[in-house]
Length: 88
Image (cartoon, rainbow, N blue to C red; front, top):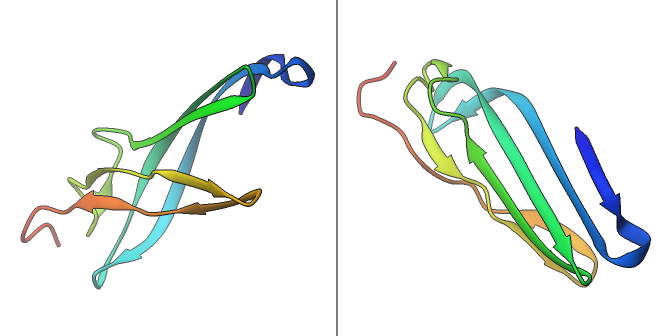
């Protein structure tokens, strides 16, 4: 993760890439997802996207986004994805 800015003043940005290993819909494999976030005047905009071409195994060809939901100071995620048929 790499960040910059001045969070104390409500301005900042960060980027990160994570490698995920697991299973979805009975398919095992891996992929990477990329975070990108900015904060301006204390308001955040966050994006997490599956890195194209980063998937392997039964998750080969996965695409999607992972919206980050911030409510009452807590973070939660909803993985919106597509998997090609017959990728395993």
